[in-house]
Length: 270
Ligand code: NAP
Ligand code: MN
Image 1 (cartoon, helix red, strand yellow):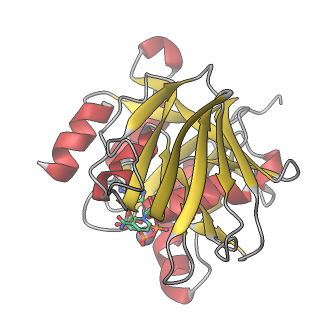
Image 2 (cartoon, rainbow, N blue to C red):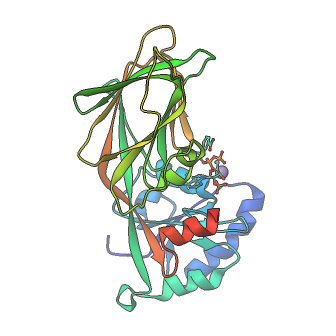
């Protein structure tokens, strides 16, 4: 693309958000960006909202790896995917005015997981894939790492998180926080049954980007689990097998100075 400053702004279209965003449209044009109507014409895609909006922006624009994504937070705080705060336009101007040779900004590359359901449809996830019982009965899942039958899980469900997703759902079930510089995926349990008949590892485990994870759902009356891709659910349906691996794709975002992943973790949680 010849014009490297084609910008698409992703946000809700309600009057409150439109009035908040108005200022940003003006600012962008003043700093030499061209606002485009279609995300496919953009080389910078910016979400305005929270982390949830950023996840939606990436999903609705097809997990592009040939553009930069950026998040602008409308809340009072920055969040894990939002490096900018809507009131703090000076930071945005600084980023927009700096050229790469000034080394003001770097590009981060976030790992993404690729999920294949019943050998057919493939989905990508930036936070996590979750498989959960949709009924009160436990869900039984055979977990394979490559060809190895690793364990039979019985409980509420499993979460397979990316490094950037490790601070979200994964963290709520005591998974580890993983540095996004490590291309890997983390498998965490949601309320596993552990007794003399059923045994799972009982700890989260982290797989390298060379591994394939397969989840086979037992067909014992609970084979319509809820499948979550970040903040979107697949409509409840029969599922037998889910294959998960790290995608070749990376989601690129702008990294400002003094805003490393661990600075964000500290700012958000400590
Ligand atoms: P939501 O229910 O509003 O999200 C829950 C919270 O998670 C929000 O505060 C959201 O931030 C935050 N969040 C999202 N991604 C994060 C990340 N990578 N690191 C740290 N916090 C993060 O729904 P949502 O905003 O659409 O977000 C979807 C995510 O919620 C899912 O991908 C899943 O990770 C998470 N979730 C968590 C639980 C749980 O912890 N029990 C259950 C279901 C889903 P914002 O307010 O900035 O959007
Ligand atoms: Mn949210």
